Length: 194
Ligand SMILES: [Zn+2]
Image (cartoon, rainbow, N blue to C red):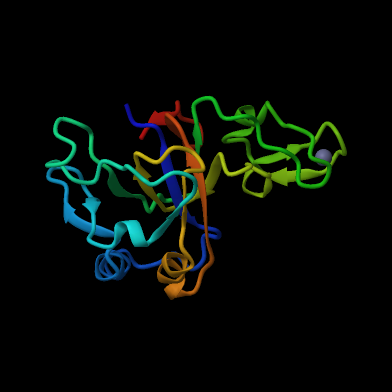
C-alpha cells in the first residue's frame, strides 16, 4: 500500500511555470528518470532522487527499483495539472485547516467549495479567509499545479533547498505538504482520487 505522497506546488498561481522546461530541469537534476508508460507526466525516480530530498529519521527504504523491490508498487513522481483554476488536494482523513488569525479549526471547509467568493468566515474571530489562506498544517494545499511523489510517509522526507531552487527557477515560490489517500477537490464536483 502507498503510505502517502509528498506534494510540491507553486505557492501562488502567478507565474505558473512552463511544463516542458520544468520537467527538463527535474530530469537534468536527477529527480525524475524514465517515463512511466501509459500515465501522462509520470516518472520513475531519477539517478539523484535520494539527493534531492532530505530523509528524516531512519535510512530511507523507498521502493525505487523494480529489481530490489519485485512486485511492489514503485515510487513515482507525477505532475498533476495545470488545472484551469486552483484545486484543493488534501488527505482523506486530514485534520481540518485552521484560521491563521486565531487558530480556530474550520471543519466545515468543504461546504465552502464552489461558493461564489470562496470566503470562509472563522467562527472564532470572524475573519474571512480564502481557502488558500487557511493554515493547512502541511496536510493539504491549493494550487493549479502539483508534483506528487508517492511512497513517502507523511513527514518522512522534505525537499532539499536545491530542489526548491530548481522548482523556483521561473520566479514563483513553491511549497509542500503530505497527503495520505489524497482527494482532489474541484469546484462543484465530487472529490476525485489521485
Ligand atoms: Zn479565526
